[in-house]
Amino acid sequence: MQHSANTLNQQLVLITGGGRGLGEHLVNAFLREGAKVVINYLHSAEAANAVAANYPNQALAVQADVTDVRAVQAMFRHAKKHFGQAISTVVNNALPSFSFNGDARERGMQISWGSMQNQFEGVVKGALNTTQAAIPDMQGAGFGRIINVGTNLFQNPVVPYHDYTAAKAALLSLTRTLSQDLGPDQITVNMVSGGLLRTTDASSATPEAVFDYIAQNTPLRRVITPAEFADATLFFASPWSRSVTGQNLVVDGGLVKN
Image (cartoon, rainbow, N blue to C red):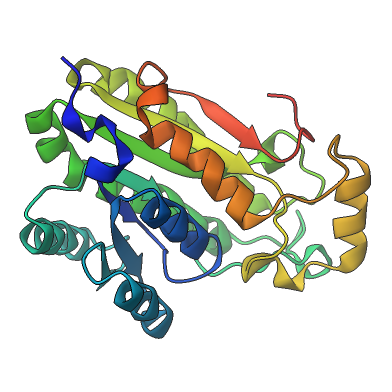
């Protein structure tokens, strides 16, 4: 039996870190397709509430630290009460504070375990918290979509951001093991991995020479935009991906062949 939530306009989608940067583009993509969207934010209250105000019946901005399991569970309860339906799709996009500036990165001799731990807490623990909060209602519905935001840097570490890349690689591993675990409940778990995006808050510190280098080495000869990345993410929430799970889709203009 096809579940009604297969169609995007029937879904309630949680997007973590949805107030700004890539998250804002993800929010707009799902809203455009008619989905109801929970815009999770940590600090970007003004931006998140501004988007929600433009879609009063479709969007809800909720402040929560995804590393705080109680805050995450409260957000899920609030969303379910507000919309009268459970969250059916989770997009794990939230990122601990990070600036993509290769000149200022911590190199191998300098990187601290604290930096690594900070990324693992935000990326892996955050995704685990939201996934675990979503599972009971997804199991009850016999339908669920978990979409994790990754990076092409662990396949092509042109700039070695050790902490960020290690955390995203761990998230890919979690994507695969969760897909195996949750598959019998008809919950799919996939990853969408971008490269350098032109431009988000995180990539605003990236030197222009790096953008040029990436563009020259990419088959499409250009750097992908956040909106293009967001469009590709819709696939894993759509009926067209209903038999796809445990996969990592690289959206970077063909720079990395996955």
